Image 1 (cartoon, rainbow over the protein chains, first blue to last red):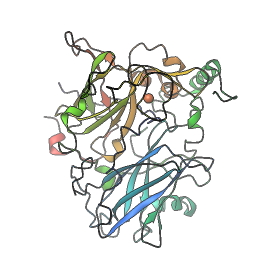
Image 2: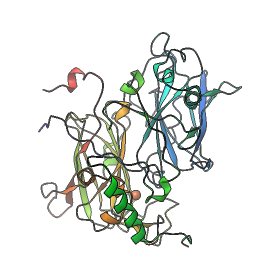
Image 3: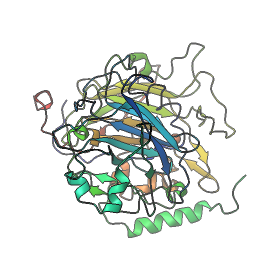
Image 4: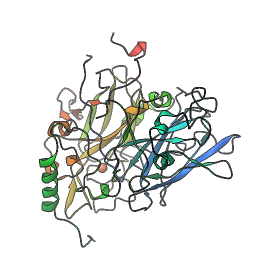
Length: 187
Length: 252
Ligand SMILES: [Fe+2]
């Protein structure tokens, strides 16, 4: 039965305009229960190249927990109190997304902490990868951030709201275009 | 209803032909910058992506299990009030990584139009009937060989507003996860021989002919069942993984 040896990857296609009844779900953006202690909101707006909000985007995040452990726990679709370190949120009519979660800690001593992010949208023909860094320790030693100019770095680092939440906008195109990532072997 | 500036199919087809004629052979990835798909114009990055070695959190795909997915979610024809109209069919295949290893126990999600080409979505208002017995979304977990299997009805082609008289070839949207976060894939599965292929800017955003063919399922009479459903087979290959494979994933 098993086929082995390298094969060419299946190409991606846009998520299209009609994913809302299939992919988003109530608990998708709630990695941690609302009102639970030590939770934060990670929120922001997705913009297109003309600076208009994108009301039909979908974001997914993958993260460590508050102790720096990356959970390998099922239950993201029916959470039942489990912290799985994965969530999904669609943007609203104003292009805004919002997750309720815990702030990730660095996975290794001295490293930076970040959310790994995938972006989908109508009009976006294939998914995009990026990161959202927590504005905290370890940013200076991060190899990815170190490879970028000050201006480009800024597109990957969240801002701290006065209430402790994290705010981060994603710009698909333009002068302040978010830094998107590719991984070895992806092209 | 149509914007004054709406292009004709002929001019869209000319744009596609021009891009394909100037594309590098072997460019197998979907283009993000593909103007014949008008919505992509302001929604594609213009800067080169930064190549990074994936780290801890990017090397770990989310985990899904039996507490997430009920097996009946793989049958889109189940409805308490009756059966959907259309050609009942089974779609099955395997999710593999680029090394050919099965992706086991991982989530597969699908969504699609009904047999008349209409989605259960408030933004789809074109004059084709909704089917009260068809919702059009399903999910399942792959088995130990990486296999998924859905029962559904064949979706119809549908019009959209990219240009004048624009129609999408019939397709099923697929969402897939691998072992790593980096292997995430959302794509569309098409049916063999669709006359709309050459006209569709989304399908044609893959400039390489061989790569485009990877999105087309195969009719398989061994999947077809007597007096019940036609059968299609479609295997999905994710990008390569970066981590050292775990024991359970190595060749047996
Ligand atoms: Fe569609």
